[in-house]
Length: 290
Length: 305
Image 1 (cartoon, rainbow over the protein chains, first blue to last red):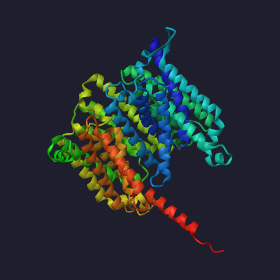
Image 2 (image 1 turned 90 degrees about the vertical axis):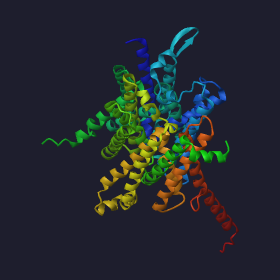
Image 3 (image 1 turned 180 degrees about the vertical axis):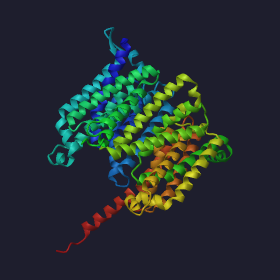
Image 4 (image 1 turned 90 degrees about the horizontal axis):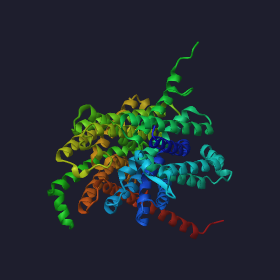
């Protein structure tokens, strides 16, 4: 294994873990499709921040994307609260509209800039080792390593600090509100975290496959675990496993790394679906031994 | 370009006429079928199916090496179907909820398709097969023959919907009652979903995967605000879809460097916004006015002890 290969796998594993942790709460809170919406609309945040700063590397891009993620959530909730459309329809209305604005802005005003929609949507992990950070002229490793490590640290920190609050708000929102845990504030803080994670993971796996990493490992873990803490650990482990095995699948087929990682996440889910102890479809169907 | 010239082009310019006609057909079909999806709380199923079509299209290409739209259509249909059945199986047999099942199937199928696509591109001239148009669609490349194919398939789908109107209506509003009357609910469900897949496949070339979900949800959500009857809603939804399609095609042809798909989506989003605000009875503006009037009446009323 070359250094570049190791670096790619480490970045992918970090991203997978960083996505799986908030993903657990998305799956449990029935907000999985919100991550799909956010992963599309953050593009508009990036584009708008780019027009403001004229730079593709500014940290304001991440701020813009996070703001847009929160705006998406608020717009969906605003629409749902009018009771004129249901939540699923509201999601289906908001994100294509914001995404269309982003595409139009890019094609009309940023055509000659390197803001490649394909790259944002699909990602290209293979190039991650080439974008390196220099500290005092010394090579300090690829930039992707710091971005993915940063978002993982942020997620770990947030979940560790607010573990009790998140747990209560997820399983019993009414009790959380009654006890004064401010589930609304927590909810928006959490959705900001999801947006930041989605943007951070963009570079590595592209926006569509951020959804795969946020949902597939937690969904598989949901079939294995009965405790929140276990589900978090299993989801992270499954995420890392899909990232590493996906890398080698892509290597063998000479195909898209992100696509292969999502495929492996799907394969692992399928295995859990069929053979999970107690919950697997094949296990449940097996007749009881006399 | 002035408006008169634009409308002249709508009828006499080959490209614009083809694109506008294609977008209109897409709007009618996806609007009408989207109405059922929205009412059945399956608004995001369209999003999942359109992403999931990718591996079907790539596999169809790899198997046949053909670029006939029919081959792509069949591949997309098969994959969309497989995706729908997977979602149904996951939600029925595990404790995973429908939103997670949708997101899971959407992203995994799409990732699998992406893997196959990149694999195929290294083996052959797949890039020229138009596979990379899949994401955003390229309405400008529609040919008259494509539009005729869209119209035929669309007419078949709409005809089937009319044929099973009573059954679909019952399935949408009270599936349990339909089952108790002895209707084959599972079969009807699969049939209606298949029609939805057909509508999505028609739209892929025009607006692409990412924006296809809007074409299903938005016309229906707009139409819902104006009526409480299914007949009117489906009709209005188709009309709104067609209106957005044609106006999107016109606007994008009048301005430089504006892709058709996103413009169509913004047109239909504008229609939704107007409907949500101003539709009689349900509109937010009227409701707010009503509330204000009631408040004033309560405040000025002389309350009797």
